[in-house]
Length: 223
Image (tube, rainbow, N blue to C red; front, side):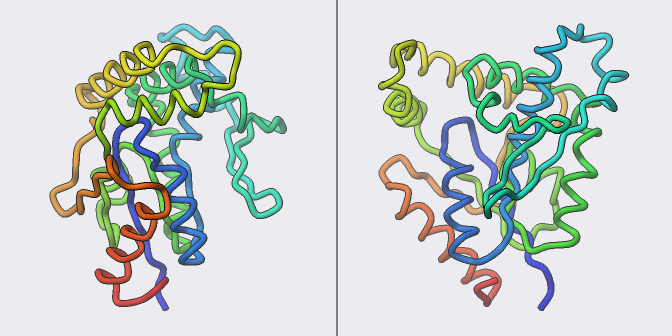
């Protein structure tokens, strides 16, 4: 059976990564978290205090890779596992900015396509269905209201001592939505042939099951 490529796009905080992992487990295909790649580049730039004018020439030194450790995807910067370091609000905002840089997107583009050519994958991000995998077998645009996305994020962070307020999280989400939708290179938008899935009133399991239903309906197989 030929490889099946599934693209899941959507705004920050829509649950793309969590839901895509669940769907990949249900269907037995590889999950590729492209956002983690961009976050790792943002971490590399931030840690090394690289100015914008030097980003392009510095990228070959980044050495970003995805590896599977005990069945889970982990992201590495050189030999260092940075999977947890890239999930801070600071790196999230930095990733939104650096992902708009054409040189950064070009640097990671071939890595993403190479994985998709060789495997049945679920790949999530901002421009998977429109740019990275324009010929994907199934395209999903996953979203939820900004308020619900902020509420989910606040619940995730509530136990941490430095947890931002709900309003601060909502403001960050609205700001990032604007940045992602208005960037010059590969802006966030729903592909014309993508299926819209709004998870505002769905829990994770319901969201994953809906996407599995769409995939099996469109491909006629269970991957």
